[in-house]
Image 1 (tube, rainbow, N blue to C red):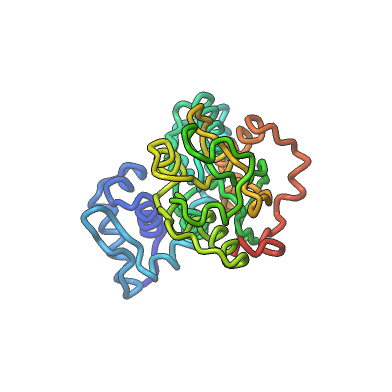
Image 2 (image 1 turned 45 degrees about the vertical axis):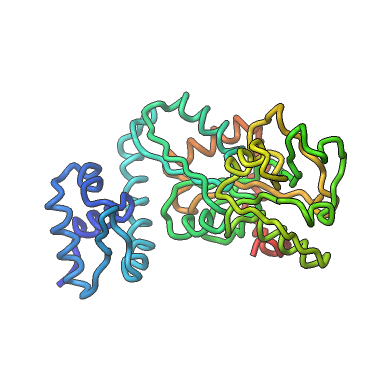
Length: 311
């Protein structure tokens, strides 16, 4: 018995949405039709493709392997549909975006939402590790990541470079300092994003090289939470200088031991790049961030060749 296109379509959309109900809505069919197609596909394969949970669907190992192929097929179908329809304007749809810091993603999203108000944008802040994982699992359309590991499966567009600063409140005893070393922070409460973040890995690497132990490390979730923690006087925040909107209450201080620059990249699975929503998002990013087409020739160079920290 062979799988038919309806079964593959039902499975792929369910995997994308994490829900049989939402998949049925996107496909314009009943939920029972979707669940029946998926059940028949599972019988054909002799294995479960989803773990059914109260909060949605989770792909099994077999499901992830099939989705890696079927999602590419669905992308090709979407490209064909777009070519045939010959859209004169972007219609309603959905675009999922993740980033490991809110900026420079936010200005691009704001401009995109203004230009294409009928496109639903799902934006999530996640750790560096989770952003790369979701890209390779094809769980998102676009990611904006600092110092990513790029391979042949990913389209990449270099954005601006950034560097780390120590941020303190204006009433902090370090507020008048122009520079700080990591040794100056050894006894301070140092606030960093969650495990799996690029910040934590770089900080641990630098401290290891210098033989420094930070005795009061405070782990939060994302960069905005780090900012809030600093504003509430919890300690010194370690932040990329373009990771958040400016605040008159915070002072950024150069860290002499972490003065390297780090590149932000816009990433997408290679075969999703020409999808209308993804392509238009890339175009908007070029406009908002003032990126010329001349960078196109450089956008496939894997950073992992020369950046140990990206591993």
